[in-house]
Image 1 (cartoon, one colour):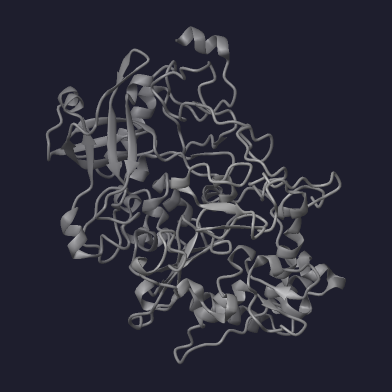
Image 2 (image 1 turned 135 degrees about the vertical axis):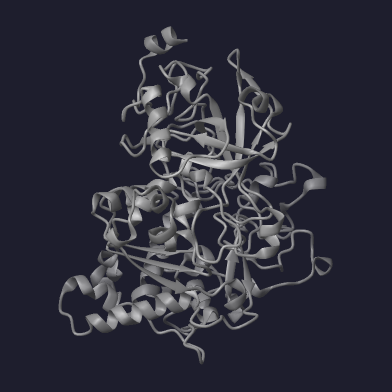
Length: 583
């Protein structure tokens, strides 16, 4: 709202500049700068819903770039069944990962649930350049962009993602040339004219400059913007992403900054570039007290300089730099002018930090504790066991194990969690194809405590089979005191740890193994649809898992013994009296 405090009142400048970057001269005031070209959400399209829509037949095609959902996503079995129901699938990766080869060597081929010659999906594998074979930036969780320089040319037909999308856009626009259908105008009106090298690769530097933004009119027309504060809502500026505006200030690609630490301050402002405006700590006005002085001289970061009448310090102040700490706005003030001198949270509607968030979070204004979708222990705080606003998917292919107080809870008595190893990278595409890393961690394993090993007859270095309501997998056993039994609610809870980097299939992988994520079901958080992938109820037995139809019978036997149905664990609100009685 234009009536609130802070910089979100400038959202129209960010949006119009984005539209000008995308549609150029076609974006004019009389057509709302092509705002109607933007696609509208018409439902929940998170990645897991998309997989279920594949199974339902409503998603026909899919692009996978830098993802390996057959291994890296929760409920790998559902992921593979989804891909098996597509018309076409495009996979771009540096190796022939499991998500590109499931149709010939996936677990469901081995179990007999899929037959290659009956799968209609047409799979296109396009080799991709890795980060050392292309120019571009990395952006990490500190918000810092760091430029990586191409060291070698990509081999064979491998190309960068920039090349792929640029050429794809060209081909689509060629097919649509001459179309008079209004639905095609957004594609035909796009600005799609990047400089290319001798191999047809778009210039990543030029693309970053477009993202930074430029002046379009006036004496500075064509020059790179110094930052987002220069963006306008009248069509006189263009910027592909307002928070990145400033990365190309002064016509210098500041993500390439690599000044050694000994030659700059401890904040390291000249190493890479952090969005927005190269601020290394957001809301850093809060590092000073309401009067503008450091809370601690030892930790001084930014502060008010009375003589200069400005905020100074070790970082770029995240605050209007000339706003005196004593400033109090008029009641009618809006936007940045409405921020008091002690309102450090400049993107909030009231300039304050919120411990109680009355809007923006679907699951309530404050964090609280709920047990996971599958848990052998009761919620110790109150009778509601699980988050009532969680996203649940009651389906026969997504059954949930019983939780505390439910009949059959002892069929899956242990808690499994997944994690990463230093030697491997996510779903393994960048590590299991490398002999050196594969030698360091050659086999999929599970970690169990000595107590659990004794309880289930597991031997260190031997095999174990893990069973959940979704699937069963096998792993080598690592008996370790790192996995400590917990006493929760008066009962002992055993934990099982599993790294999730292995998968079955894939062409050329040095090492393979069952996928830990095959055990997981799909339950999502209500705000951004992140999967609940760190907790699953399982059983563990010594020895290797069965194969083929025997594997399916094992999973079905456990489902039958536990008495689970599609609604087990999927009630949003639970009866308080019933749960108290169950306790």
